[in-house]
Image: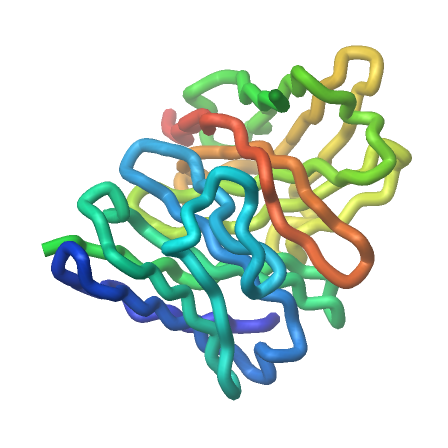
Amino acid sequence: SYVLTQPPSVSVAPGKTARITCGGNNIGSKSVHWYQQRPGQAPLLIIYDDNDRPSGIPERFSGSYSGNTATLTINRVEAGDEADYYCQVWDSTSDLVEFGGGTKLTVL
Amino acid sequence: QLQLQESGPGLVKPSETLSLTCTVSGGSISSRSYYWGWIRQPPGKGLEWIGSMYYGGSTYYNPSLKSRVTISVDTSKNQLSLKLRSVTAADTGVYYCARDIRDGYNSNFDYWGQGTLVTVSS
């Protein structure tokens, strides 16, 4: 199976920039999607196809990748951004959907 | 607005079969553009994809669960179903249904149900 590695936690002060990474072998060859999950809620798609935002998702959220790492960037972090964030890809060689282990974003 | 709602027993005994239904409203489960999937989340842990199905019958399952899982679609009721056999405590968690945008090269989930907690215990 294809493994996606995320840091367990990231902390950032309000108004600053948060970067959450997602590592995977040759991840640049895959489309990466990102989900936000607030406590007690279902996941919400916030970035799809590496760097596209669904309707209603603020421009503060963006995606990128370099080498074997995809990155979710959240600019001007707000208290309401405190949540778990998951990256996800589809491994076409095995027809398998893979999620990263998740990163808990704490707003200080 | 598309809405998905999971339903089913909240408590299942070990070795029995977990059965859940997802009712889709505000759109058709027979849409040619979408698959429909199940994802679960053990308490305090991350997301695990269970499988996805196209209304025409094509299904994809997580190999780790494939021997125990059946996903089906009832187009007359606009419902997606999940059956997970021979459950153990490790199958305890919140189960979500979601719309799967799948085009042969990619897959992501743009609409989710609120989730339903299933506990496996005697």
